[in-house]
Length: 275
Image (cartoon, rainbow, N blue to C red; front, top):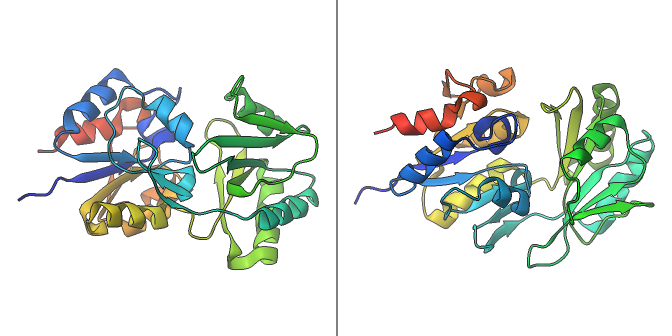
């Protein structure tokens, strides 16, 4: 019996358009192909935000969320989770204050996957811009004094490269292999973001968990992406495909570079062309 091909795509600037929408064409192709292929996503987004973006799409395969910190099915069956402890997260916050910056913290309130987004009341320009995307979101909690929760999935600093690069170096010096550090340009603005994760909370480790769950080899999967947090996944997957607008670092490790960008439905056009 022939096994179904597996395709897993990043969302922001890969499958989503720059206005954070899924086009009618991409929706149509995805839903048509969902009977023939196993289709899923690997995103920095949370469960709720991913669900909101993909509400029109047929989903039944495990999703890689929050950069790989969590692998969960669309019906909230938890397959894998990688948590930063409260003590370690509070230590990260303390070290960050030496650079006059505090992170956003994405955490779980409980094992029913109810989410909390903690943020400091004192914000820089880049952090203000991020909050605009979460206006009236009930998960957002403004903190006079920022302290971590018990189940922290990732900490994210937003700011200028000149602040975040030295911070990344400092945190790696202090915490070493206790954490994963990813510094990348913020494509929705002119700033950067530094994501702090459990050392096995990245997309590569999560991809391995998805393939184990499906009973398939990583050589069987094709992945799509555009940014720094996709590189580990690209190196692991059988086939790695970069959209035309991907960072050069991502294109350099891709097997295929699409002629179309996310705003031109590059992923959907590729899926539609497969026989």
